[in-house]
Amino acid sequence: MKIKEITSYLESFAPLALQENYDNSGLLIGNYETEVTGILITLDVLEEIVVEAKKKGANLIIAHHPIIFTGLKKLNGKNYIERTIIDAIKNDIAIYAIHTNIDNMLDGVNGKIAQKLGLQNTKILDTKTNHLLKLVYFVPIEQAEITRKAVFEAGAGQIGKYDMCSYNVQGKGSFRAGEGTDPFVGKKGELHYEDETRVEVILPKSLLINVIKSLVESHPYEEVAYDIYSLENDFSGAGSGIIGDLNNEISEIEFLAILKKLFNANGIRYTKLLNKPIKKVAVCGGSGSFLLQNAISKQADIFISSDFKYHQFFDAENKILIADIGHFESEQFTKELIYELLIKKFPKFAVHFTEVNTNPINYL
Image 1 (tube, rainbow, N blue to C red):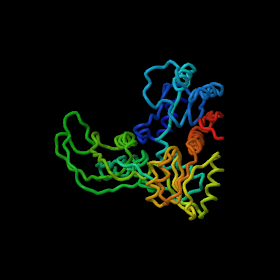
Image 2 (image 1 turned 90 degrees about the vertical axis):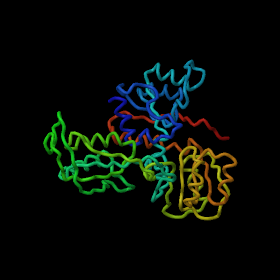
Image 3 (image 1 turned 45 degrees about the vertical axis):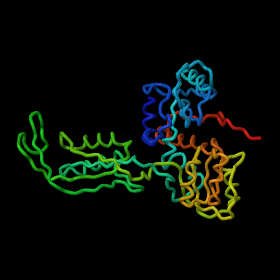
Image 4 (image 1 turned 180 degrees about the vertical axis):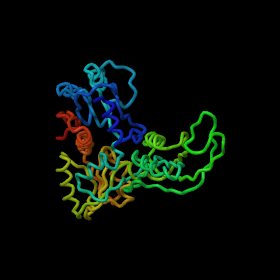
């Protein structure tokens, strides 16, 4: 199995188009055509991770955090980033990062946290905008069902938890086939009118190429007439953070104790207790302070994330309880998520969890 087969599958779940503009997800080191001998999953890539991958016979490291964030002008080993890259290249070990693109999926990093917490009725806390398109195409009435099935299978027509969504209206199309054509209906050089169906479907931008390919391959016409429109609708399937409900209300102190145990947190920084039960929970793995106002506006009782600065705790303003559980702690289940994705698709392949604790923070 080649690297490109694995990365294509991961990107079908978490498209690179959904990563934030500051991010650097994707294949950072290596060749897509390389045969994979084994995979090592980690949150961070350090020199010790490369050594571990070599010992385990894994020539592909899949990490959550990219080892390369900014441009590299030299590779002379002056810091851990350069040394890690040099070691990976010397040992023919590829490095792939799946970062904010998997953060931004409903069933991604935050979805995994929500699952661990037992949250119900989960929704994206801050949905993506300008990531949806509308595809409109025209097809002979009798072939409409064939093309609809094709674009649905390619991922179009998903609205929230509904799929196979389309709008269809019948009309009459006209065309005249020129020289060198082989028209499906009508004759060369003659104006032809055909009863057609206008089909409208919504799709994420990341699926556009595959959807158009499926449309063209399933369509009977030599030249397929279609239009693509940009939409400003929120994309409910992608965005930052998750919000959901606990099955039963629980006191603040009890819930903080659950968090500490579940996330194996050495300490939790939190704001003033509000003396009200916890029911609606907002979460964001990693640095999520930018979502605080979203959590407040959606009336969450608690916001679980990390990397809050001192003055940002004041922004809770007694409207919400903030629980900062630590960056590493909040993202630790990402390894499990990636493992489950890979094993589901490649059940007989050698996939390993790292045994190295890459958390750079210690507590006294």
